Length: 344
Image 1 (cartoon, rainbow, N blue to C red):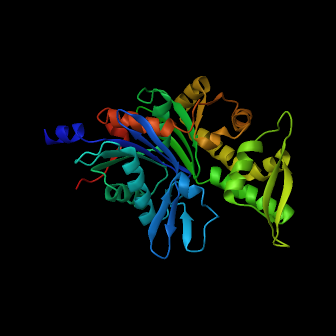
Image 2: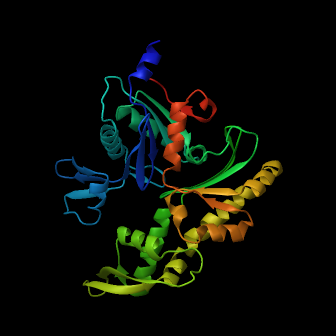
Image 3: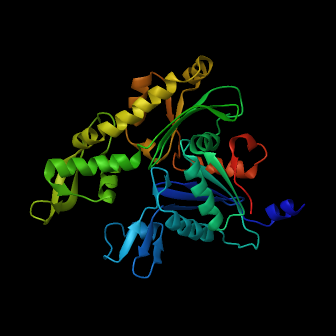
């Protein structure tokens, strides 16, 4: 009875705690927040200066005593205290109506997460104000968010390419049959672009510039018409700011290594899939989700390499948090695929 009352009077929340962005879904309201996973901290006073979009705008532009930190790396918590601060701030922003009873929270985590990393996520959420914490694997959450029949005895293959990790899973009967989690995704693509420009031109650019280059002219396969764009950075020889033009051909060459690692992981996951479920995947194809799945030509390349239909969903950025939201609305139905935390 007390549990029912608590559930009725609390704003339950679903969170996609991503390396690049955090999305928050509130039961009954849908997605209410989508902000970068960045926190700006004043090192002198230890005071939080900004969180989210405001903090991301400060990356690489702050005075010495203010540091813009990304507290998650490769899909897991790298800085426990800062993650807690960020979660608390996002939960506060998401809850327009504040109830006395703390919310239950469903959080998506990489399928390859360790027990220690899982505990860190749970503790951070509890310290940020959660009453109960439920963890769900990202590929399962994205499959539910897309609307795949994960509870049926048929194979559904999902590739979720985020900022820190690429999650590949074959799901059937509310469980993961085969999964592959590699810590190569959008961030590694950005790093590859930074490294290429540094080696080829002795020009140092920031991560945000690299991300912009990837989004504007980045691709995994040849473009019908190759493109160029101007980039600005600091010349490593003279130390003076400089502008140069870079082509989509060069960017594709720079991205070849992380892209080939993603392709290899998909092939390995397919090799480990039981034959009966592999037959279902031939019929249904593979579903791609996550922000980095929007890299131009990546679906075409995977189609060529696997000879399977590849479907990039309409809004790949929101699939995981929408899946968490569906789980939140019916915890009993999805009991088998969630990991419940200890209560206190």
